[in-house]
Image (cartoon, rainbow, N blue to C red; front, top):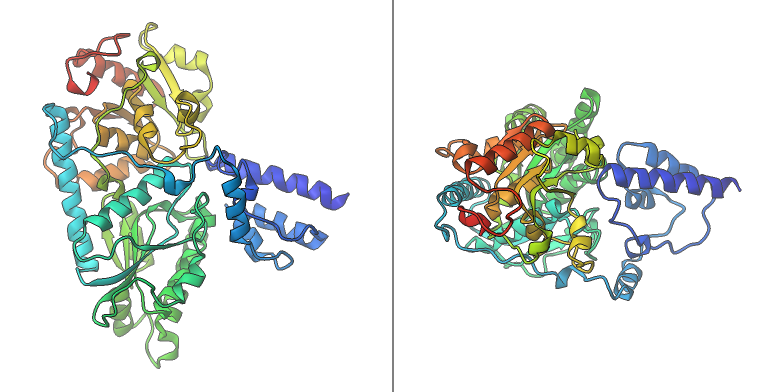
Length: 497
């Protein structure tokens, strides 16, 4: 009875964690992700799980791996379970949106965006040339995101697009999983790293590269992902890899947690490079730092994260680099359902990063914030497109992600990658920062040094301080550019025709 009660409580904690992190739809069938090979769960195992759940942001998979009384996860069984859900399209059958060519538009506002996209990609090119060069024999993409958070999956697709464009880089890369390939059966990184590359060139002068997946999960905001980073650095360095952490945001809830994590990473880097066994050589010595900088690079999509990283990880090569999602597209709007179009799409998150989540389900409150009562709007998040368009077998970054944004003449959003995708698609948008100010910080790095790119009025985007401010700015855009209300199929700007 005790164990049963604890399991129910355990499940409630787990579901709460999923909802807080915006992942509540990811595990409708936990058997697809994890398989328990034993039916017995002793009291000690249950207590261990509860303790693990109460630690910051620990995912069920890590609990399984750390619980000695549980057997290993059998990925083949998980795959069998996945294949039995015939209505669920597997990731590798999912088709990403088809891009258009840069400058393939006559709209001056969209042309301005395309010029900026080209400038951002040139920044990417310079950064990768600095830390990697051209002679790469083998690439391992570490912990790419394959799940229903479209923003995270956008980053995986962008990483693939970047690698495919790079002359001389092997493509496709090998991939391995720690946590984020929830919907895709990939081999465990700890096993892949220690094996000789299967598809690399046998060239001792070339580089064996590990690219750690990009995102906003460096720190304790999503601790289940970040906790794998330090031990992976040790293992990768021990096996001759050069490591590049793709553009990240850094965030810790406390100074103590930040300092402890920095020390843990430093210790693992020293062990991976063998510095603690070399007399007088460590990451506090010039020779040790020079060695580490040649093997370890961290990219940061926020200036604040870059500056903090310079203090925390002075032995690594740190660079401020635009969000990798700008490697996607550009795209054209997709409007296949005229009957579903509205004036404003309110693209609002419902997890712990949101500053307006209490309003997103309050229709009366939103109606009261509208500058004009005749305005039509719809509140959405990524997974709502599955119901709106009836595409339950296609939950990844596909045409429906673009079509969801294209339902509105203007998008109001508090998701970073909803804003970036709106930018790539050519849709006017107004964004509200989430709790860490991520969107403003990321766009600042992306547009820095690019003439006029940080001026939203020239490219139909704006920042708002609140949901009410965002709605007023959205209506101002509609008024200024003659977008009208209710006429959802025409407009003077090419974006809306």
